[in-house]
Length: 353
Image: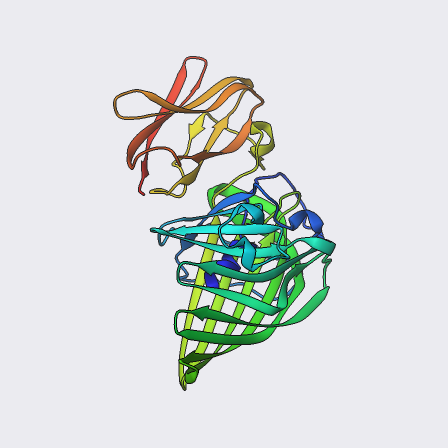
């Protein structure tokens, strides 16, 4: 279930300029739609804490470091996916590729809610007979919502029956600090999901488990998905308890170069090391220009061939963060070069697939 929860709640990272925290409403524009896509990377969890609930909070995640390979989640029309006949009420599907297998989750987006009907892959099909509402909007500060769900996951000769509760609470607002110098107002939503599963083989029960997932997600203004998730998983299976913690960070940014400026004044001409690095397949490149002018930011392979143009336009003085999606490139080391007038700076980045 974890991979599909991540597919719902992590999304596009946008870099916007704000100076004071404010309460943020989680509106219907946060519901996923056909064509949405985002990439997340797991981060090291050392000394990463969610903090307490309330107003005017400050969350400092500027020191996050990458701890594993990225994952891309895509949304498509449910009718164009292979398992759509199993979920007749779905109008949206998310897709996650894991090696040679693609997993699909199926949703309805009616009534400003994201309602899950289940998910499917070559390993089996999980269908809810009582669908799960995974996001209900609008959700303003201190709003809460809860729902019951039940279903079963069926494979060849086996079945897992599941049921549980989900609740979410817009419990905090304040200012979030993220890698690369990003500072923005943010709202935090706390999700608590509890499930009880019983597994059967040939109709005979062979295991029971209970999982509690508590996750915290941060939203920033004008952007669709949260920028960060901290999740805790506690599982009790056949009397044995296991616990884990995960932090996921989104590498996508909003479009429009001028819209990617950061707070502060550019004191000099500077090109920052991309973050994350190494990366797969998306990263962010930061730079500063102290004067307005024509700016180019391009990526080259080690043969000197241009493989991407990220910026080629007139920009105002300021501090910028630019996304780079290397989905179509091969693994390896590349150079990125920033030029304005006769001044040129360059650095290396590493793509690992």
